[in-house]
Amino acid sequence: MVSVYKLNMARLEKELSAKSFVGTSDDWIDFILKHRKASAYNAVNANVDGRFRRRLVAKMGAHHDFDMVMGEVADDDVFDAITLYEANVISYDELKRRLRTKRQNDQICFCTPNALTYLEFVGSY
Image (cartoon, rainbow, N blue to C red; front, side, top):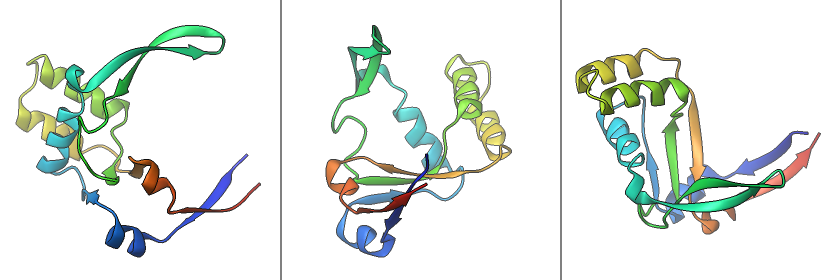
């Protein structure tokens, strides 16, 4: 099933606190690195398919105070490169080079319950 939503970006960006990244900039890389720090998460036991699993849940306000963040997707390729950087296997410049050569995809992250109220359900199929 696919759900379809409408989002008035102009209204949202005017009324909410939003952060937008363009490409894999230094600012974006620093933002991603900051969000990988363990101190910004709480370990919780969550029921996943009838079994309890340890999951990390972001602490409110630990990362940022934005209602919404837009920009590049930090996928497995990104995290593989960051893991090498954090292990001091590659330099920051090499990290940037690797991230800038990956296929780019944008995402929108709704970070607060208020941001979700700006979505309008259109339908599903």
